[in-house]
Structure formats: C-alpha cells, structure tokens
Length: 286
Ligand SMILES: N[C@@H](CCC[C@H](N)C(=O)O)C(=O)O
Image (tube, rainbow, N blue to C red; front, side, top):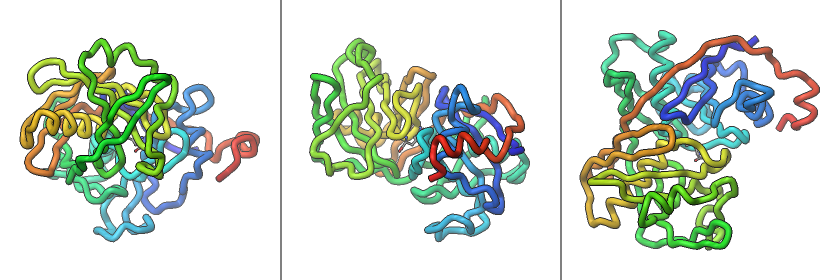
C-alpha cells in the first residue's frame, strides 16, 4: 500500500506522495497509473516529496524537501507553478516542515523555490528569474498560425497573444499545437493562448507538455503575464490571470516573478502498491 494525497491549484490537479528516503522511485508507468483518471487516482501530474540528497543533479541543501514532479504521461518536468503551491501546503499539513516556519524552501529541477502560506488557502511562491528573448517562434493549431513569444520560467513556454477572449474560447485544444522551427524547443513546450480582459487582467488557456489541455498552469500564467507585459512595454507590475480553473496573481520586479494562488488538498488515501503486474506489463515499466 502507498499513502497518497490528492490536491489541486486552480484545478490543475496532482497526486502527492511522501518518499523521504527515496525508497519508491517512480517509473514512467507508475506515474501514468497514478495519474490515470479511471484506472488510478487521477491527476495532471504527480508530486513526490523526497529529500534533496537523493536527487541526481541537486546541488543545494541535501536536507531540503525536493518536489519530484512528473507530468501525467510519465515525463519529468523542471518546474510546476501550481504544483509547488500545493506541495508547500502538503508539507505543512503533513507536519514535514515546522508549523511556525515563516517560509518553506523547496528544491525543484529548476532550482530553489521559496513559498509563503499567505492565508485564505493561498500560497505565494518566488518563481525566480523569467527569461523572455525577443525572437518569436511560429505556433500552429490545425490550419491557424501565430507568432508566439518564448518564455522560460524554469520550464519552456510559448505564448500566443490573441485579440479577444472569444478567440481564446473558440480554440480547439484537444489537439496538440505545433511549432517552428522544430529545434526551438527540443524537449517540447507548454503553449499558452492569452487575451486581455481588463486592466492588468488577462485570460488564458493552455496546452501542457506531457498532459494536454489543463484547467490551469502556474508557470504558464507567469509566462503569459510576462509576454503580455512585454508587448505593452511594461516591466514591473502585478497581473491577474484568469484560467478555466480560477485565477492567480503574478507580480514582477525586474526579472523576478512571484506567483500567488490557491492550494487545496481534497483527499488522503491508501492505494494498492506496487502496481498490479499485468498493468506494468501492459504499459512497459520504463
Ligand atoms: N502545470 C504546471 C506545469 C507542469 C509542467 C509542464 N507540463 C511541463 O512539462 O513543463 C504548472 O502549474 O506550472
């Protein structure tokens, strides 16, 4: 049996597990099973809490809790902005960090992230440096194409700025967007479609690498706000980003970003483990 929690941030949902001493490393097939909405628990991703010392390539404090993030298809991603808020909340509710700690430092594959529980069930995270080069790429969806702004939030994004929220709502994101040049994102990319919806307020939909369309993507909201601010010639500022699953706030000071939004744990339970052998065989235990 494995103990799990289920949580979400603006309905971007995750299965959470604690594996302090790295005794249950997850294969891609394990992750797909956990994230499976019919045969497993269900989620857009899986967050495993493990001490940093066990993560190859982590050169920070070995005692820090590390957010080992996986997309629902089993792939590894560097960062997850909604996930890191839910992860901070989980560490606190599980008693894995002191209840009176002012902040929570978390290791991720994109580096150290610091979270503050700010009340009302919301968590603020210092998202680090956001890089948005000037060059654009071409993003296509079925027979439509647009210029998109590449933005790096620790993980890769391409942001398409559209004129109206109706044009965002009309998109069919059941199919994956394509991009050119192909080598612009050798490891894939998350694609955001964004339109203005008031003063420093935008609306966004996203097609996530390794998942498909989700109701929210925290790093995507940061990328969307950065691309919108850049297009408006603004640097510092606070943006509200509406997503199908709710809304979050993104603040910029210089190159740095902070993301604030809800973090919810909805359930705890026990799951059969290891995964049934027939499923491992079916999916391949890679
Ligand atoms: N939903 C996440 C992003 C998760 C990773 C992404 N799919 C990727 O592969 O980079 C978020 O809230 O940031």
